[in-house]
Image (tube, rainbow, N blue to C red; front, top):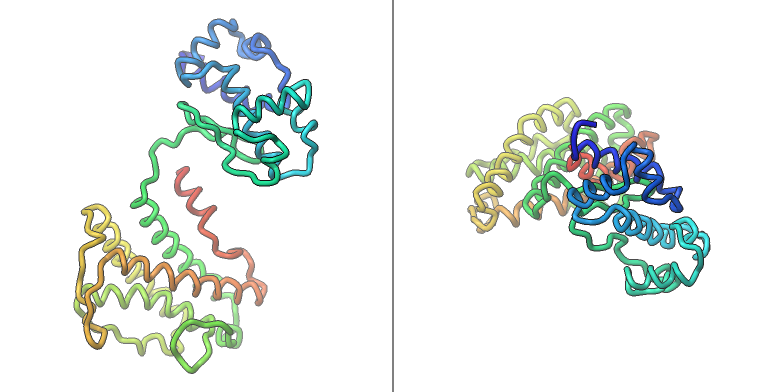
Amino acid sequence: MTGPRDTFSAWLDVLVDTLDEPGLTGEQIAGRLHLSRFHLDRIVSAGAGEAPSALRRRVLLERSAYRLAASRRTVLDVAVEAGYGSHEAFTRAFRRAYGSTPSAWRRAPGTIRLEAADDIHFHPPGGIRLPAQRKVTAMDLVQKMVEHHIWLTGELIECAAQLTDEQLDEPILLGIDDDPDPSTLRRIVSRLVGQMAMWNATMASRDYDFSVEEHESLTSARRRLAEAAPVFLGHVRDAIDQGRLDDVFVDASSDPPYVCSYGAMVAHVLTFAAHRRTLAVRALDANGVTRLGWGDPIEWLDAAHRA
């Protein structure tokens, strides 16, 4: 170790590794780092704004809250796992932290994270979540949702390429388009791409040719996505960066034309796309292509945030 930062990082590693050893003393933990208790306390307190023993007790309580909500362990078992010698001692500590008894929490759990200046918390199922290098703003989230939509549309095309024409053109119930013909996976994929291309045309005051979506090949959809997606994402990024989500443009493709804000356009695209994507991934699943699951953005967004 070369300095306080390295010592602090090493202590966090020990913290994670010893969560299942709640009875360890501060001296024992310091000994694993070949440090004195005084030296370790000073470095961790300076780095976290919280004494290591207090931080460790809080993280163990957060783990307890998670286990009460997510498992069938008895309250006493959870108490022992958190390092408490009795049900009563655990209940007192838990009530002080969460304002509720463990049993009441189990019936109606809330957020497991306790307020902490250092923003170091237990992260289920068995890890530690450190403070983010940068905070995600509402505008960051809007952009990430659009990026996820573009990514998933591309993945849908690649997965759909594994199917036969018959499977691509199999009717799908519960479509949303105002069309007497039933939705199919082919049409949904084409419309997901076309939706972005259509809004690109609208914002450029150009007409959009819907005929390209009639029995479109996946090769064509892939090519159009490569053209339309960067332009659409560029509009979104510019509107966010320049604070123009409330700015308006004229949708001349409608009859009569109407005024639409950039924010409303993004909300419209994501709302209708979410349903179409869900229909598409379920159609893929029914045909044995399962790797996209439900197309849920949660893992994708978490991975993007960690990157």
